[in-house]
Amino acid sequence: MKHVTHTYFRARYAETDAMGVVHHATYPVWFEMGRSDFMREVGVPYTEVEARGYYLMLSGLSVRYRSAARYDDQLSLSTRVSEVRSRTCVILYELRRGAQLLATGETQHICTDSGYRPARMPADLLAALGG
Picture (cartoon, rainbow, N blue to C red):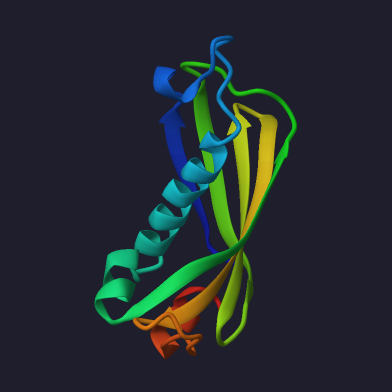
């Protein structure tokens, strides 16, 4: 089974609108938090990837909102890789409040070198991501 990272946090007041509902633009920020946690857990922190001269640039993003997250909700975000190729990967997200699914999402990434040219992922990164 592929690795799944679980990130736990509370919705902060600054992330909500006047109705106390988490603003839709916050979800991609949470996804990034989950990706960073995932990378650390699989042993290749993103800071290390960049220090080696590679970037996993965002090439696509989608969010499906199912139910509103609200101020001070205790939330859990599951993050996992669904697809890995030599230069690209797809990461999936599930945001929950308890057992209730609030949102799902997907990000697509392309590996580039420090000059932002597409590059093959280093073998250890590819393996850590499940490729």
